[in-house]
Length: 209
Length: 209
Image 1 (cartoon, rainbow over the protein chains, first blue to last red):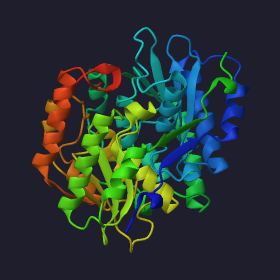
Image 2 (image 1 turned 90 degrees about the vertical axis):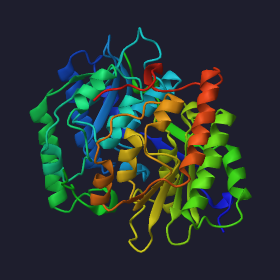
Image 3 (image 1 turned 180 degrees about the horizontal axis):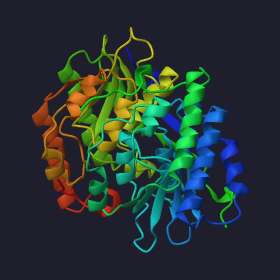
Image 4 (image 1 turned 90 degrees about the horizontal axis):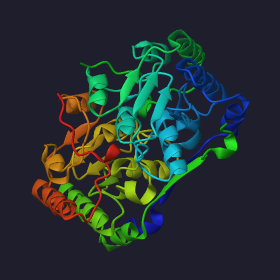
């Protein structure tokens, strides 16, 4: 029978070196929403080209200054952990740096999450529990599932209102076309068999109402 | 300005020693759903008494044999990471032990997730991407939010049907009263000021339709 000696006791996620290189190419804080979105698109594109994960990136920023608190990319392939989506990586690394599970612990310091598309079902919940007070996304339509073949999971139609009820404001459609271009390029590489779509059980999007 | 040297690059979650002690007290595989649920209740209760996290525990089991693949408890307080709910811990540790992000990669080996209540919004998505093919829970009603003051987040009314569409079967109401008793004891400790409810921004359940 199974004993404790058989079990894994630790899991761990580490940013690839190339993410740090991209941070050091920036020449200042990300002060406009377009600056923020542009950087997530750079990271998302490089992530799938590097083979570390899907075409998704996220940032946690100090809302007042635009200084980067943390950076995340989707590391499912690199880490072997299905939960290590860009948002979970960025939120977790922000919590490591800040020293705790509540990024909103100091009400005088607003923290925002920038992502290159609407969060999936998992990351929607993850952002709710993180303490961020603002979400900025490039878009929220079906384009990601259509172009990349990822399943984003069942979401409530009122998902934005539910965030706002919990004190998280939402800004949508920041550099939308540029974000879609990254997904289009990724989709072409999927069609050419150059990358893996890593949905559970290898399935594409599931359509269900 | 922020450079890569300022950033956290790694996050990590480790099971407390006492969880391993509890595994080694078992005298065989967990072959019935009641056996499985009973063990999650033991772990959930000890977790809040130890102060490592909320009253939640999860197991990943081999469906055919009842052998334990991994064990998780809520480690938000212990790890300082808001995503480290019991389900994410158990799924991640199962993936570390199995060597990959898809617990359903071998269709001949079914893996099931046992939890002492309905997953929250985040963990609902996390289980979708993990590759497990069965979910066993003690219950799915409002009792957890009422007794513990946790916000479980916005869920779709058809959340079970959405899982089944994606190949995950669901069994509910296994040792329901025993699970509720753990939440009741936890809620009493919250009322006495002995534990922290660690929702983002320190809020209790948010009611919104």
